[in-house]
Length: 408
Image (cartoon, rainbow, N blue to C red):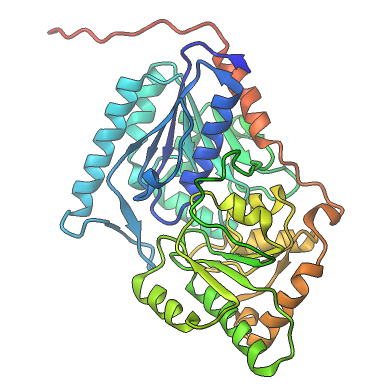
């Protein structure tokens, strides 16, 4: 382990929907403190369940008020009694004061260059004046090019991305997808882009504290946070019902993780539907899902970034039923991975046909693993990020700046 004396990394995860942003930040943070003694990481997160995860020594988080994204794309406060603008103002204030007091050497922003509703722009400008390295980390796929272009133009993202950020990290390999495809990026900005490779995941060294344990062979069904995962779960349940009624399929038992953000009405309907089915085991949430993935014979999911990294990391046969709206990120990733033979993609309309889904589940344990697909999707992203951080933070320490009050 190398040493970076007193180095501080601040991370930002806006977390309006699902678990992906926080889990990605946490993965990077843990990798950094494992690689470098003396390095401390603080994550600013809007996730309402940030406290449900374990954090390594020298990694901590600051919770900002939660905002949730509705199905129509609009945002609202998690607390219905607080106005959205009031919530956003509280978030801006906490973010800025956290940055001032933590005094980071590097600020890593996840996916949203200016934050939710531009809430970190003021903090970015402040930190830039403090000679802090500003980094934005992008998924391998952001969205369909025409949708991203429209959104970023409306929000004025691209000019400020070019103006403010020192580095742009793409958490994937260059040959898979260009997340900024379709945007007119400057030559100078393009020179600041680094493709890191995917972020490898590992089974926790300590598994005794895992919430759930499963005996025997099984297929794992996971939809991330579960906020829009009910359709996939119901499609799987319909497939098992079809197989039982027709006696025409030999399906492994299914372990289904509903996710902490599945709406109550949908959760209760699924719980009732699965009652009495001995080959279906339902779970709400597991903060150490890596153990369940490791032991599964195959995986069915929606193809979010973290799930895809887990499929690659644990070399799992997988069926992916991607979300197709309001973003096409999962659809693009699933189609590309299917082209490469890494996973099997099922369009949502096909997955809703019980016989088709039952056929796919039965065939899943016999599919080839991602490692057998003959393509190279590197999992060295955490190593690459460590090299970049070391190169940047090992430079001579910047002078301490102090603000002195006075008149003028």
